[in-house]
Amino acid sequence: MTKTAIKQAIHWSLAVAVMITAWMPAPAHAVSRIKDVVEIEGVRENMLVGYGLVVGLNGSGDSLRNAPFTKQSLESMLERLGVNIRETNLNTRNVAAVMVTAYLPPFAAQGGRIDVAISSLGDAKSLLGGTLLVTPLMGADGEVYAVAQGTIATSSVSAEGDSGSSVTKGVPTSGRIAAGAIIEREVAFTFKNMSEVRLSLRNPDFTTAAMMADTINQAMGMTLAQANDPGTVTVRRPQNFPGDMAALITRIENLPVTVDTPAKVIIDEVSGIIVIGENVRLSKVAIAQGNLTISVQESPAVSQPNPLANGETVVVPQSDVVISEETGKQLLSLDSGASLQSLVDGLNTLGVTPRDMIAILQAIRAAGALQADIEVM
Image 1 (cartoon, rainbow, N blue to C red):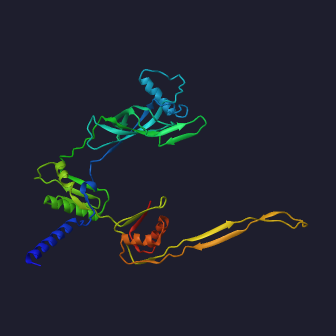
Image 2: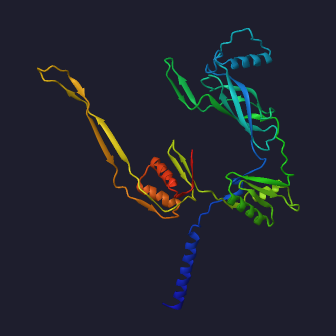
């Protein structure tokens, strides 16, 4: 091979190596943005609630005899409109008393619209096709922050026959009105003039809070953030910063931070769901699992006397008891420091069901070999 051919071969080898390196996936890291793992103090929603009436129902509303609050509300509403029905006997099923709930978002401006949820309060069968009348929505302080009104969308179907049979899909006694409330009052909160703000971690952790503060300080080139506790990081706006607090939050909320989580195993015994955290580790342990089944089967037999004997025909019970134990299960051994993958692979090797897996995890924890916290929902 000539020198020119050797050089070309070397160049081709280097090019292929560079292409392979470029196509190799980078190692995965549990990195999230700061805005995805924290809540900013003071920037939150406010709950609103109100009581109102839904009209226009096709005979599926409250029975006024069983729902006196609906009757009183209907009489009061009609009196405000100039109609006096105090001495009359109301008998309508087209009206229903409801509770209206909504969330007032942070920095919501007066005149904006929000969604509302409507839930039946009496014995109404369906709110399908109903219209919510003007309903004030109040906050925890008793002040009215929004007013709701509109046609209800239930996204459900309900039908009933004369014989009493019925078919229901979904929940027809609750619904929503998209953009059904108008904001009448704003929540006073001055954010841009603040000199410092606290970031509240959704999952408090000392390591995550410390790494978040270090990330902010390194990105800004000065000490602005400090981890006060596992759930709070305080960020201070410097005097020479060319902007307000909103501009500072914009600079830091997209910074990547590595989120650390404690070792935890979540168990829901009702539905058989098991969630195992990434940091769960095991000490050296051996696991064996087998199922013992006891089956009792009754086979009644008829006993008759001889033809010339005095006796009665009786039924004699015969019980057949079978005890079987599942075989073929091996003893599984896990070394000290075994990871989540080792634990999952080992339990799958035993062929256990989620119910058995719950018992195994609890037994490992009782033996002191599971280095994690078990939380039973």
